Amino acid sequence: MLEIIKELEGATSWNAMRKELGNLLGLDTPVSSAVLRRAREDDKFASYLMMSRNSIETLNLFLNTPKNKEYEISATGIEHTNLDLAKRATKAIFDWGKSGFQKVDQETFDTRFSNCEQCEYLKEAPDKLAYQVTLVRKSSNKICSACGCTASKKAWLATESCPVEDPLHAGYNLWEQPISS
Image 1 (cartoon, rainbow, N blue to C red):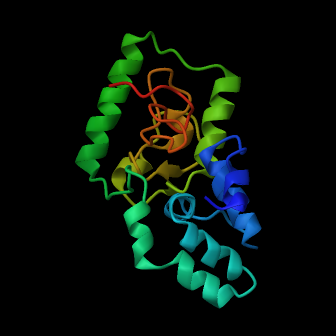
Image 2 (image 1 turned 120 degrees about the horizontal axis):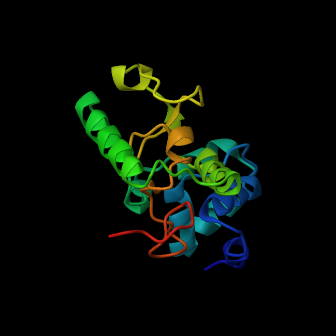
């Protein structure tokens, strides 16, 4: 692994590493998880990124090459139907009710939602009926494209977890919680 890529390992999270590599390359945004993973595993690719950081056209070729798809993290954003979303919401509300409607404390929510805000799976909600129904107070309308949930609502529920595994910490999700089986 290139020394400059090794230095990224000191970052506090996967999303922080994405942001730091983006900064190193002169970008205003974090690199994708696929680009970061490939740079960590492929020294030649990492070298090409670093050499092309002064030429945005060349850098974009490396950032957008189809080969990067092979390095995408497992939870990919997929199209969720209204029926799928309704089933997930029903299960989440049922589980939440069984817990006595427990919410996490403000600090836990802030940590969870901060990680969501940095995640590449956070997207604007599509124009679907499921996202037009408001069950709780007004909140951000951004959704997690990995699971389809409204991130700002899900992050409050003690019974919910992030569906994306942290590539740096096997067995943990991007909310820094153990992944339940």
